[in-house]
Amino acid sequence: MSRFPQVWASEDEHLRAARPEHPVYYFSPEALARTARRFRSGFDGLATYAVKANPERTVLENLAAAGVSGFDVASPAEIALVRQIAPTAALHYNNPVRSQAEIAAGVAAGVASWSVDGFGELEKLKAQVPRGVEVSVRLALPVGGAAYDFGSKFGEGPEGAAELLRAVAEAGFTPAMTFHPGTQCADPAAWARYIETCAAISQATGVRLARLNVGGGFPSDRGQGATALEAVFDAIHAARDAAFGAEGPGLVCEPGRAMVAEAFTLALKVKAERACGSLFLNDGIYGALAEAPLMGAVERVRVVSPEGRPRAGAPRARVLYGPTCDSIDRLPEPVDLPGDVVEGDYLLIEGMGAYSTATTTRFNGYGGYEVVTVRRAGLS
Ligand SMILES: Cc1ncc(COP(=O)(O)O)c(C=O)c1O
Image 1 (cartoon, rainbow, N blue to C red):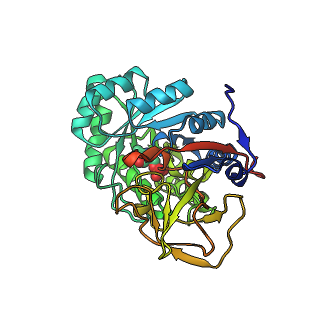
Image 2 (image 1 turned 60 degrees about the vertical axis):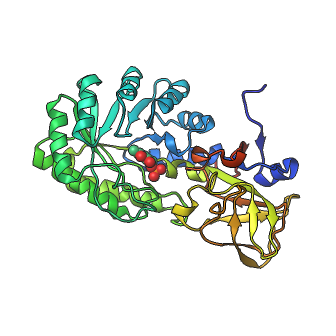
Image 3 (image 1 turned 30 degrees about the horizontal axis):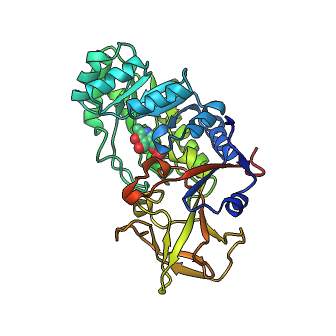
């Protein structure tokens, strides 16, 4: 069998030829490489990739080929996966709560940076992690702008973070700080507030930060428009310069969603239409659309017939259900679709690369999917 995937000219061409019964993710390596370039050229620091957003091998292989040399990992399984694909890449283990066995696996794999948000977890790191290795204290602030909140599970408030930072330095680790403003964060000011607070903590404690990891949370183009990322980069750089001056720490970021979302378009088949107009799809909230209840309305959807003809009828709001025999498997809001959509058609949803394949379940025997590579014209 060939090592190289068959590449299709477009989603529609593949749909016409294959008429798949299962969900298909159309992957554009060019779109992924273009986003990696946006991070590499626009972000003044080390752009790593948060594997959790989409751990498909092809994503990691293409990112490594595009020059991404660091990966944010959350478990020994993610560490092993990255090591297979990018053996020399830097591993940043920024899931701040770990068992002793998980720490041992990270140490064995040569993790370069660890985050921490509590003294109990720091004690565990002290027992196993060699001194001199970077340990980042994770700060949590009540900032807005994200699609959903992250601060309630992880991170210490400013006072606790200051005590922890002192303890990290006293233990002989290389001190750093990190935060995560919440995923799909549309407010650049959230990063500025975090960076200012990290600078204040560094000054108050007298601990100079080796690096500052400004997290994930970067917005994908979904709803925010194609320049939202650069607006966040500008806010980060301005806040770093204002808060730290010329001697500021090196920056790291760890985007998941914003790196991978736009590289995938999802095709779902309409498997039935009710008399009232609601549609049943071949995937739903237990699969590719798991995030829909958190992220709100599904956007950027077009519909094609099995022959690949675009449906263009006057828009009509449709209730969309997933395929499982479970009544909560329903999208939270009706979606405007061309009025002439019928059973057998395909919905093509853009920007579906993040937290889709990664969180898909096999509930009721559904959840199978295929990844098909497409060439997107004009994106070299
Ligand atoms: C520590 C850490 N870094 C990065 C990310 C990626 O976040 P996003 O996909 O919003 O960029 C996450 C997401 O859960 C995370 O927990």
